[in-house]
Image (cartoon, rainbow, N blue to C red; front, side):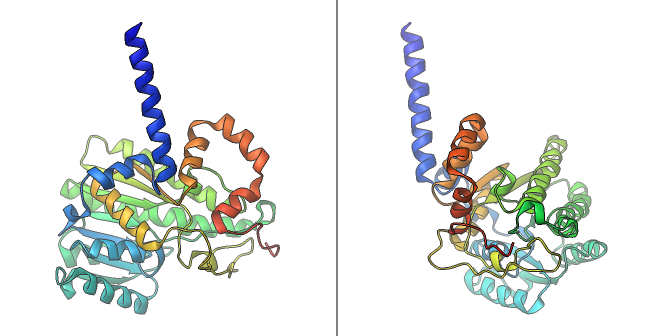
Length: 329
């Protein structure tokens, strides 16, 4: 009887501590402990990381976080001038750990699938090898589900899903040949729990989880790792660039300084921690989104009741710091 009492008390204390930490932290508990007690991103010094969508947002600030630790970078995106700006900043932040040759600019459109192999091989030839592929390029969405034109769904899947899937298959040829590699994909908490007014976006992010979780299991016998990075609201230009319900249209609403979001710097650093520790899936967001995510994943019946009471606009306000979606969508 004493044994069961002690065991019960231990479980109660464990769950109590986890609950408190979930409310205090801006990431999931695994990443929280990795940051405090795990491997430092300093362990990545000298590694080569190929980053898509590196000209802005999370890709840009992950590049900065890695450059501070002497990580060599292949910066890929559509805008060469912006990539050169990011390269200069990376070299500055590296404090002479990196030379001009250690940061490569790769002008590339992720939706031009036929060009992927050429661009990836260009980086391999430049550095001799690639250690980590960081799939980050993508766009979000704001639209009412029933109004979305099917062409928008197709465009979003090309960018958010088929782009990283195709590039990863090319990278795997290299990783299989050298016997090791690490694939990271910036998905979203919208790929862990559905969110309102982003139906197509959620579809692409859930799809990424399906593709890359399957890949991780297939590669268990090999020294090839897969990390899913799931940020929540972050201070980037993503909102203005988001898809709507119409092909070719951008949402055009800017993020405001008063919005409740994680800084891109903090998100980039936590991404670097996740890479150093080869986490499988990492959630990154400000309070109270992390405990809400835990509730939605592990207590779906309870969360269903809670969300029914709160309504969809509660999640929208958490996400965009606004009471309701712009009615033009």
